[in-house]
Length: 316
Image (cartoon, rainbow, N blue to C red; front, side, top):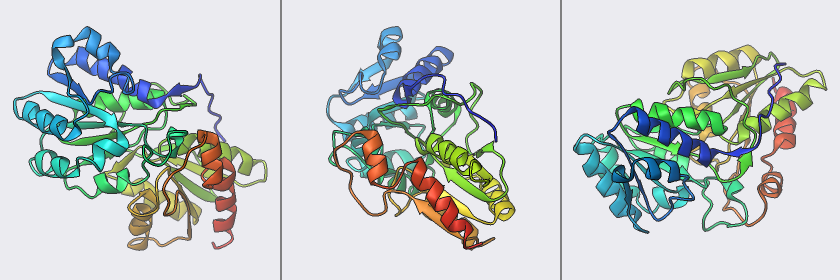
């Protein structure tokens, strides 16, 4: 299998900060708003370089989204930044009515997503946000896997005309993807395989690659596909891989309801049904602990992905 090298642990939220700065340099219409979280969203470089295009909205996400919609109507390209828990559930009505219903060109930048936020616990973690954003008409949902892909996805989001939800995290994780332009709606085949397909998104992509290495040692050839864009889903790539291998695992740092697993299951059920296993948070809130402890406790690490792959292959 193809080997991926960790170029150094970096947090994906810093990839967003780097991408926002690059987008700001490329287009003077790019503006940034945050809810008293400039440091947490890594917006300092943008704010320092373009202070006239940076807006501090205080702890008032609903007002921030409304202001962003107004800026978008005026021709700007606003990125609003907060924790994923607060910039989705807390302001769902504003996103629905002021962003998606009107198809305003607002980018929702959500950091600290999933349980790998870690010690902050259930009140600040979210494993329901993808479901919320997927349900909204006109919303693009992007969940990049490392610093490099997050940077390039942010640049791509700035060029896309319409609502975008960008999801990223706090912990430092492997940075392994090539530095190349991000294509919204494309599934990235990271490893060709014939025995089982592992579809993964976000932080789970690196876990999936580690699982594939462990499976290779047992003579199992796993195909690993990075689903960086959850909506619109690359259904052609999903179906082709599932048909080729005949067995599917979906790994995501999100609960089952409304997540990537249900989405892929729906696509395959209506086209090419295959046995499928899910590696996710099932139907639970998070809890306090280190990212590694929580992934293991919730059955969402590389070892559990490998176990799911072996289990689903028995049903081929």
